[in-house]
Length: 374
Image (tube, rainbow, N blue to C red; front, side, top):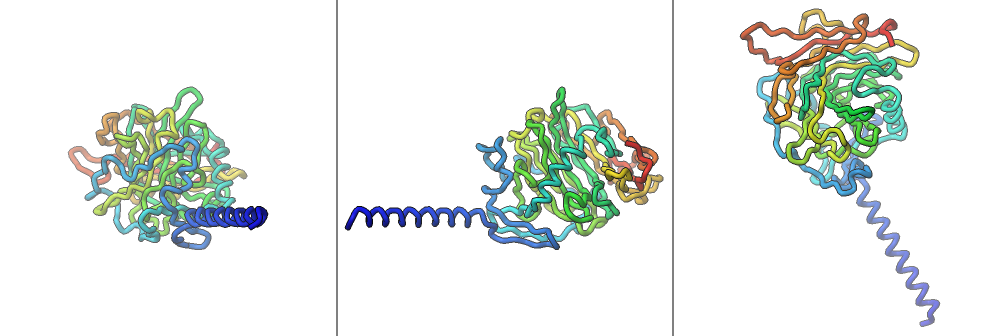
């Protein structure tokens, strides 16, 4: 056999092996199964070890934590419901659901972070807030139950209910936020969505899985999904730092049912949260449209003393520096309300010696409008 023929055979063999390797690699990256839960909303079941969150440069050597080192106790008789959302996604063992991100979604997520959101204050133009926070940290976590509502929100507006933790030093900020949001420019529709957000050591932030960082662990419950049944139990979730790993977990708490440990933000993403967060907060926020009008907040109604008349956030608790769970009002708290013409805040009052299932709570919200200020 001539040397030319041998060389041709070797080249053909190498091409075959290379193309086969590419095919196998492509097969590994393809979703095992997909769930289209509504128009333009599809979740792909991806190998947990090949999820996009791990592509962050700070996570090159990260080892996935499959569950928190200490599980939170199940809720019994507190404000919540196990009827809130039916399971729409059931990924096979070893895979997790990832929202199929469009280019528009990724672009809008980055724009929303950069232009419309200042994490520790409501000082960014068009942002209005109503809620409470405490700077008496360090804290290891925060949790609350929040009513979820349908609202008429414009394409360039946003309205959300949130729990958050954060630390700031000089011009640096580390921040984690979770809850529910109506944001048509981000999600492409006017429904309430569950969501998570982080801002880390590089000064950049990200929503959900629009860019790397968040590590999804639950096979059935993605960090962000449309909430098609608001009002049937609301949303109760927690952000807490794992005692052994230092990772920051998000957990959905459901009455009379096992908690759902959705996933976590790895400790490697942050440089100011190693020993807990200096600040925790809970409340509502809105982002006005570019033309000026501010959207409704909560359920769109001012608090008037009727607990069911306006939006409610209840069972607000924190983990202190020793991981002891306490009501948030066990610490000095600051009330936040920057536009009383458009929104309200009414702290809950429980009669002496009366044990309330609402715990520490408040009502908030309002209709918004054209005179809410900057």
